[in-house]
Length: 498
Image (cartoon, rainbow, N blue to C red; front, side, top):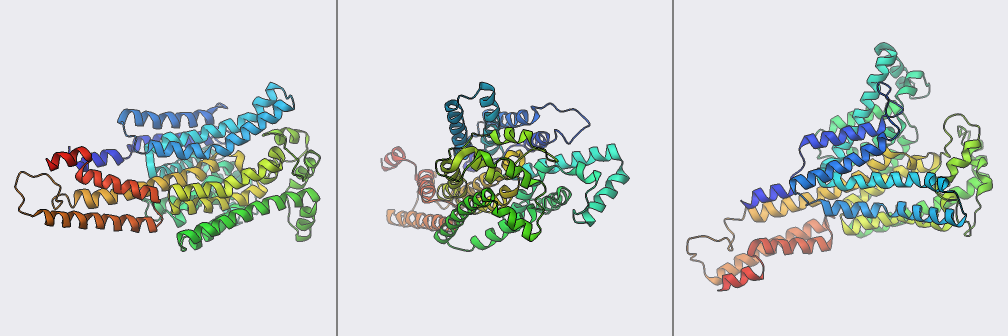
């Protein structure tokens, strides 16, 4: 078997059938409560995540292709750290407070579901690689399309089109029955993240404009106003930060992360002291019922380093008694996380989310994927202030699949460039290629060729390193792999000497 065939088998991707199956599962996970043609069970979302994980692992087992499995597993395991901290801390609080088993199970359910969601990326990353973004976007578009067709079936095509046009022409200011039926909130937040990726980083993707058009169309139908400034903030950050060298990028981004932690703590203080409501009232901003929710939870927390929190999921139980139009969610992930985790663990959580993850991705994987992760984090942070985005699954999917796929794409591009340039094209000219003919070159000439080829390889590796696509450890491993492929290990050297 030739080296080219072995390489293609090692770095090849799954059949489109597997990708479409994953897109179908993503769509299925979002339809409960919005799609009424078939009654979907309550566990359909969790079932979809588990099925996606098993689908990816089955593909790995059948094909024997494990080239992306280790990276996907390590990346996903690191993503789980904040969830595991929340789970362990919450259970410790409940045990200390002697809460009932039912309360512990209920409070832990959201974190366990999020851990299951993250586990899905182990199989999806190994199976689809960088194509995971495209199939995730396809799943979101498919979900919204099915909801749109279901609304047309129930309300009629004419009424649906008229309601959509009226809503879009008013820029979302005039709500109607059709627009409310088409507002799939979970998917809309995920769509905003993927649209940001395709606008700034996915310029080489196939069908890019199809995804931009489809995502933009359904973003307008969902029309979450907070998403528009959030996308703009992420876009501006990425376009600016990507122009700086590596060290300056990392320094600026760490400062941005510190600023987000300060804003988070300041936001909680402003709400608790009532200053936030005075500011919004003076500016004429309608909080849409959030003031009642925020004031209802005031007795349950204090601004103090000794405040240890109430445990994950407790805020939802507290709000069950409040009278408010719509769902009883706090509509501020920043405030909710502070109340549930307490000040010390809340600050630790903020550090991991806004600084720790970025540094881990940048140092261990690549600079571009780290910059994209931070751009998405800025988008998500804007929604954290006024919405319950962390409790929604689709933004979580998009937030984590984008950097994972970008890392896998950088690895794949780097490996292909190295192998194709120096293993395929230079195979005939290589002084270490075994031939039946007797070489007329002297040992000195062979050494010069060998040295030149290795120097060219080192230059290519350093260039890729400066562009931010690989880390120093990856560069060293790639050079070792190159030498091993070209002239073999110690046994091969001894055999050739003899």
